[in-house]
Length: 204
Image (cartoon, rainbow, N blue to C red; front, side, top):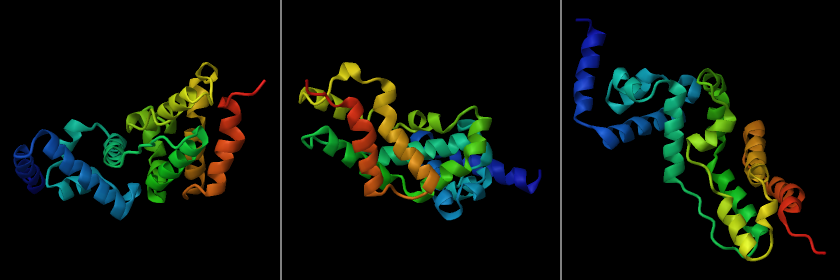
């Protein structure tokens, strides 16, 4: 038996001692540590397996590609760092706070990861548009709009899915293009100049 094959058998046996969520957690933490240390360009299944104390076949049975594995690690990061916006008294205040917290969570190196994995996403028939739903980042605006409707600020019947998603899409585009956090000025422009004119009730 080749040494490499022997090593994989040994690691596979060890991995069997950690099953289900425990093993997945170890692998996804290893992915995160590797990304933090080397970036997406330096990430390999072998490096993740070594750090997680498992084998490449074990990982490949769970995630079919490197980009799918990274998506799972990003979903874990989002789950561990949830964003909750409580009632601030107005749609504007809540949307500004939402974009600030999104910007804080989407650190520059996370934006770099998404940019670097673009080609691999395309190979998996995915794009940046698919990322939010894949990592569990959805529904952030719905509660804000519902509270705004209850306060009489907005008319939900006028708001399409495209309009509701617009602020976060513009914020994400800004961060992907600059690889920097959103400035207060950018947040205010997105909310005051683009979003609010589309959703606020107009007085007659």
